Amino acid sequence: MASLTPEAQQLISKAGLGTPTAVYGPGTVLNTIGFLFFAAFGAAWTLLAASITNSPIIPSNLHFFQSEFTPSDTPFQVLQIAFPLFGLLFVLIALVSLVRTFLNRHSRGVACAYGVACITRKHADAVRWEEILTVIHGIDVHTTTTRHQHGGTTTSTTVSHKYTVHCQDGRKILFDKTSCGRKIQDMGETLQVETARRNQGRKSYY
Image (cartoon, rainbow, N blue to C red; front, side):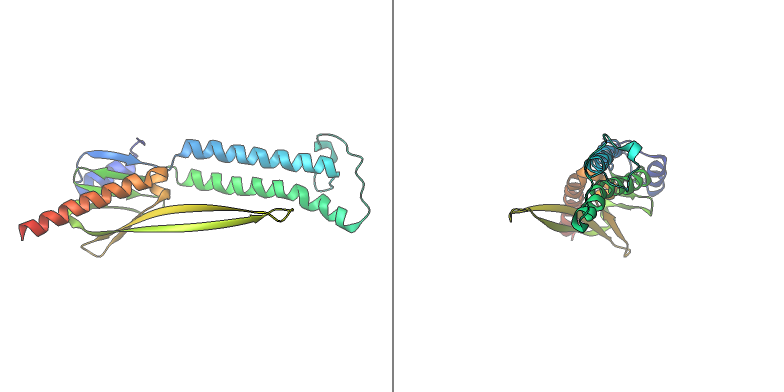
């Protein structure tokens, strides 16, 4: 269970949500390790590619070894630039992701005895279970196709889940990977079960 931040504690207390039963977060440590590894891979790729192609975009004293590769044709000169740049692109993506991970390190999704709270760097909101009208489950599917040199293709699919809580007072509270990390579906199940239970109780009352 992720740690409960002071911001979350204050919000839960103010909204009267009772004792937290589950706390979800974005998995900052694991994400940081993964992105650092990705950055190291990109840096190694760049230096190795620059060493093999004798690329001028990296100072020669940083090359792993001195290559005899001295192309004269334009296509090979383009290769000198483009091949190492792939590694630099990996490093840039990793650094941007690390910054985003750091900024979102205090984000939390918290399920409590009497309600639920969502805390991110952009907003913080809470609602009691009986004040929730509906929970909408959204799924975003992203498909990427990579073509190989020999004509083959590889397709990868990424599925992202998000849950939008619609409150009686018109508010909408979004729970997604930013606030709940890889446990977003666990939070979504809690939201749906608790909301269905309250709605069933209201129907039985009337």
